Length: 353
Image 1 (cartoon, rainbow, N blue to C red):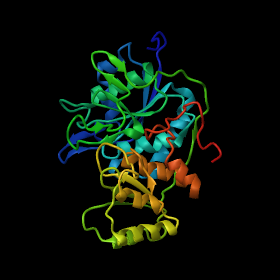
Image 2 (tube, rainbow, N blue to C red; image 1 turned 90 degrees about the vertical axis):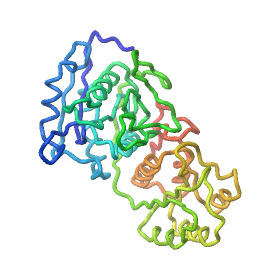
Image 3 (tube, one colour; image 1 turned 135 degrees about the horizontal axis):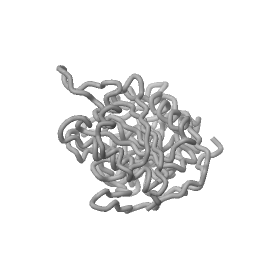
Image 4 (cartoon, helix red, strand yellow; image 1 turned 45 degrees about the vertical axis):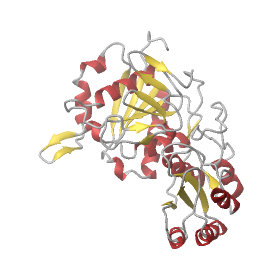
């Protein structure tokens, strides 16, 4: 654990979400300034063991359901602007698309050598029984004194790698999980660092790769699905298609379906195969039904979440990476988003782009 003789400084970017909402006659609503007032009224946040922090409330506050790549860019640039002045960063965010933002930021930040933790709550901070207080307290404390230099997501006493997390419960406190990567930290009676190492600042300059909206389709295979659905999804200007297949990456042995996917690939549409299963990895070599996809050029998504797959495609396509280089990058672990080929944090990946 890092020495607390010098209080760390943490920048909190409050983008919106349930954690800062205020009760009204119409139910809970966003209220500018209310989160800052609420935190100031809670003595736990000003204890000497806690880091110093400032809260920057976005204007307007955003519902996470409305988030788009431009909002990922805004958050990334906000952190970059304040990067030299703080030891760590906490992003307060609505839960609906929190895992998408965590994944996107993990790719956009290059040479990150400070912690960035995304958190929020299922019940507003000012409400009785809110999970927001414990989530924010722990996120601040861990960011300051248990630094892990990557984008992570904290919820319900567990810290996950951001690009491995997914929202798995719509209305419970245990809202997020990481099916293919164990938690990095567990905050119980003691704070346990489980599956990573604490990091020391190496004084790198943060680079932010801009991400622009990309035309990406997503289709879930189901029994009896018409191949025409694939054809309609991959009309130009679609650049990529995420195929949510069965089991370890299998699809029906339908000539029509394979022809549709082949036509898409011939039109330079990238087809990335991810499993529909909550846990596990794509292995298209395991069965003939998967082999047929590999034979026509479908790319394995390995054990990436759908959030990681989509945001990684946004990142790579925004870098103008195409063809063989794009395929190679999709199957390589750039920020720990898939299990094979774990990344070297000290190495800038894709540095030529």
